[in-house]
Amino acid sequence: MANKHRGEIEAELGGQNYTLVLTLGALAEIEHAYGGEDMVAIAERFEGGRIKATDAIKVIGAGLRGAGFTFNDDEVSKLSVAGGATGYLRIVAELLKATFAGDL
Image (cartoon, rainbow, N blue to C red; front, side):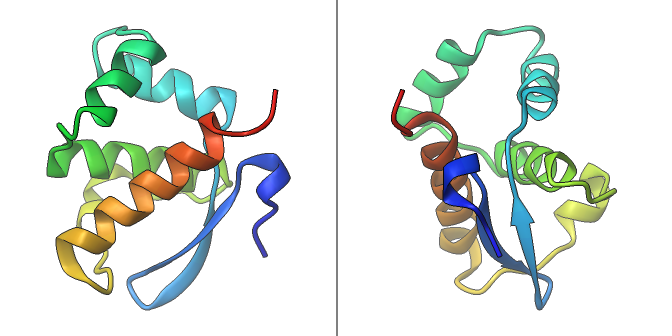
């Protein structure tokens, strides 16, 4: 079960429920995937609604790996989600919100 206080979310991927979390290592992985771009720039890109399918794969994959799963991005790209494209975007939005919208 996801612990919202730790920034975790639950998502159904490929017919199974998973916990996802963007740990510090997962965030560094995302930065690296974007050529070292900082998290503020990446967040601004996503906030502007500019999310590609490859972005969703990177974020969902990092969230799974942050929670201890060993999926690579190719495996993540093959996981189905209820709601199709909207379902993937919902997962990305929930994960980013859980990571960045918490109380400081």
